Amino acid sequence: MTDLMDSATEPTSTDEHQLNGIIQKDLVLNEKTSNEPNDGSEDMVTPWDVAASSAKGIDYDKLIEKFGCRKVDQSLIDRFEKVTGKKAHPMLRRGLFFAHRDLSQILDRVEQKKPFFIYTGRGPSSGSLHLGHLIPFLFTKFLQEAFDVPLIIQITDDEKFLWKDMNVDQARKMANENMKDIIACGFDPETTFMFTDTKYMCPAFYENVLKVWKLVTYNQARAIFGFTNEDSIGKVAFPAIEAAPCFSSSFPHVFAGRKDIPCIVPAAIDQVWKIF
Image (cartoon, rainbow, N blue to C red; front, side, top):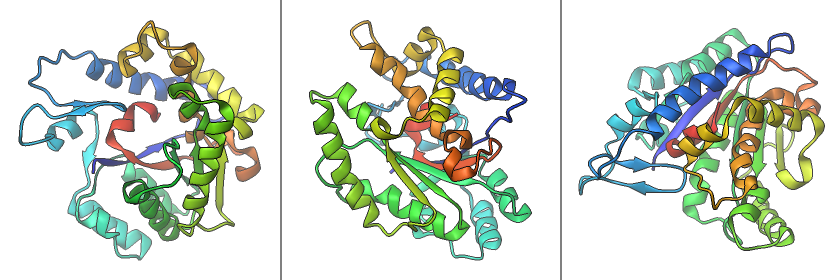
């Protein structure tokens, strides 16, 4: 399991250059990594393909460095337990969640009693979730309880429609079935907002999508995600929709219009490209 814990910071309304800085910093790393030649001697890890270069499997230490992440070491786990007052989840102690970016900043906010939220999601792929699908949600539930903060869950039925041979109604039906399974994980209904893209996309959310679109060129997106001339414009545009929930201003009804609340994102390390 190659899971990552990541965080993103929301720009204030008076400093949109901060959003530009966040995105450009990640683009430099992502584009550089994506453009590195691979003659078969390097592991390949993308949102769509994972292939080891040897029988030993993926070199996770090298992958962590390549993707600009840091190991979740014992000192960080000890600090997590001290700050939250809770025993670290077995998935964290045993290395199932093994890398992070800026988790220490989130722990700083816990100590300072400053707000943040958790963001995760799912692209529906079947009528029901299997055990592998549940792993990140079970860990997310632990984080929600340990931190006692709001949780945002994005269900990307639009992604399913764009990538698979199905109509919008079929994608929505699959999303609805998956949402039932996610609800059954036991998330706090008072502090959890789960939505499908095709039904939620409010003006504030769309405004953040627009900002990401403007700051990322097609050449950058192609280099990072491997888009080809055969891919629809919907596929090329989609990553910005998955990035928008990183910003609290995408959910004015949840955060009372605040634009300065960061988030922590439990995700697989191959998804680092989509997180700003």
